[in-house]
Image (cartoon, rainbow, N blue to C red):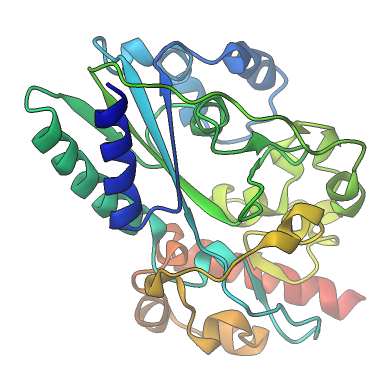
Length: 311
């Protein structure tokens, strides 16, 4: 079992994953917290969180014969900075490059193929972000990192600039152990959040989060009292990660697909505002931004511009 586990981990690294951790398919203890989070309405309009809550809380409902969860992480950090110019829009780092869903899923499918060559009767399920499992809890349980006070997985070697993915299989392997929470007494992320979305350590009210407002809140207006605090973010937000001390250990990604074009790093608000839907699709094809659509993206841009005029 040890040799097979090590071989799987080596294959994962060869494919391009930076971290690999494996845990048994017993549900993480903190899974029960999901129900309290949903009951408080912190999920906002993300109704899919409610629709699949029972599956998220029980991995055996997703895969009845699950035995092991192979968790992987890929570093996406690139060495560029956001502009503080009021005329420049801010886009989250994760959306600077190509859509990570496709990149991670392709690599996971490749890894699963390798696993089936190692374990011929292996069956499994590949999961990338949108699958109904609590991937951050599984990543923590598998020792990838710990879930920080900003609710994001933090690693000692890459900080929090990582994408996650999982493969659930029907075979037992050798398991890793969770690592210590190294947030300590730090509360930089809570202090820096402009909207107060981090209501307490390890607790996020998504309805106040800039990432939620600009990515998940679809076909609706952004409340003015929150719009005033968006700080030029038009897609996602990196503030709680940028202030995290552990991100001083960041490393430049080796994945060229995450390297951004200059126009994604520092686009001018006026230019973005004047894009029609055809130009939007051409400009952001293959990007996570494309998946959310022109209408919602332009709403974000106009919201920021309106706030800036008033200020």
